[in-house]
Length: 211
Image 1 (tube, one colour):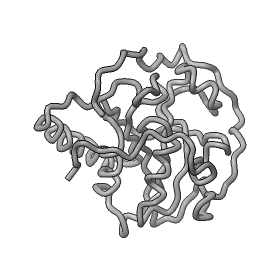
Image 2: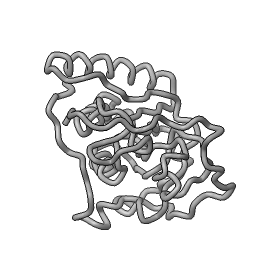
Image 3: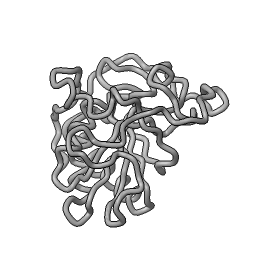
Image 4: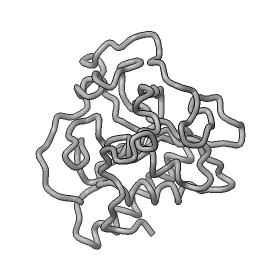
């Protein structure tokens, strides 16, 4: 965690992104693990937030296991290209990062518990990548759906940066921004590690505790 790696290109400007398409990429509406819908609208008492922390396969599994999380989905977020494919996103020319849509009951799990999962299970100091996964499509990000979420995310970044500083690690590069338009990834990527339990995952390590 927090090692030195080559520096990839930044997120492309909107005018340089691939054109995409008008129609959504087909995917199931049902979560493979818990049976809840992965497309909205969701129950009125639920909140949603989006986390980017490298490959979305391992990241999604971390969040669907959290008590109080209703459902999750692998999505493309933070970019420009409408309805991108996985192949397009992997070119780093859609502006999107692989991310996880998290739908949760705020009466059962608070944002701090979700931030703990986020900060502790990836390297937020790595620029435009995660581990050996290099490119803007793997960048670290928190996309809030309310201003309160964004403010809480900013405060959590400051708090975790202080802990990293104490341990001699670098500066957090996490993007914090409004969620904007998100696009569900193809069916094969939804709850991937439940379908392929021994599939690729580079998450689940921690050298600095969030709390």
